[in-house]
Each structure stands twice: as structure tokens, then as C-alpha cells.
Image 1 (cartoon, helix red, strand yellow):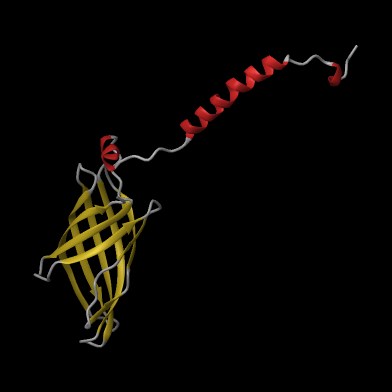
Image 2 (cartoon, rainbow, N blue to C red):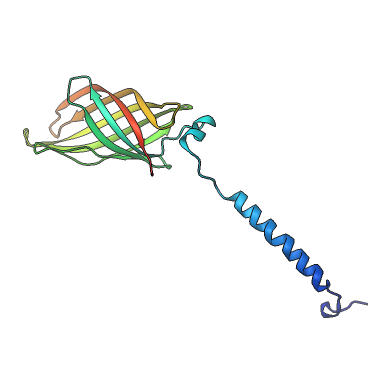
Length: 174
């Protein structure tokens, strides 16, 4: 004969308490273990996972003798690159926008576009930057292995491609 659930025997109170005292810490430990852990850049390099994500201060040296240029650049985890550079009274630049991808253990490539207005010519230009970089073993610096800049004017004007070398240091939260 079947009995209703209300008539069934339950665990004594001390066994219920003991069960809860074991289950609560176990669930807490498992929850903490499942949370992602922050790692330093050095730890990422040691595990063969060099990371480009983050913000960098990039110094560019141009092959044609153009003065050094410092630019802050940020790379997001989903492959977006955004950067900026100084402007002058003669040249007004939009931020750089582009995409990046990982090509090797510490190697990455990106392509970015910027628009600028040249007041000395009274015209705007589209500038395309294609760069390959290698993150150094410290995880907090990178150097270009290939950097090509090319410009296109509204009336078919063209300059470049011209080369450049870049060196970047990671901007850290401290």
C-alpha cells in the first residue's frame, strides 16, 4: 500500500544540519573554482597565449624621416582596433578604426583606416595602415615586423606605400 509523502519519515534534525553544513561550503568552493581568474601578462606568455588585448602607447618611426609619432591604441577581445594620434593646425585626423587577428604564438596583424583633412591642400585623404607585430616575451611590449601606410585622395591622388617601424608598451592599470 502506498503512503502519502506527508506520512514518510524525515531525517532527524541533526542529520539535516550536517548535510547543509557540508553542502554550503562545497557549493561555495565549486563556485569560486569556476570563476575566471585574472592573469598577468607574464603568465599569459608562459602559457603560450600572448595577448594583444588592452591599450598600448605606440611610437612610430617612419622610413622617410617624418618625425616620431606617439599614438595610444587599444585592441578589444573581439578583434577591434581603435587608435588616435596628434593633430596640428594643418592636419586633422579621425581616430584609427580597424580589425586585428592572431597569426602565431606571439604574432598579430591588423589593418586600420583613418581619415584626415590636409588644410595645405584643402582636401581630405583616407589613410590605410597594415601592420604585423610580435609581442616580446615580457608580454608588455611589441615591435612591428612590417608596417605599411598608404594614402588615397578624393580625386584619385595616391601616396605610399611607405614603411614605418613601431615599438609599443602596454598601458597598465596601476
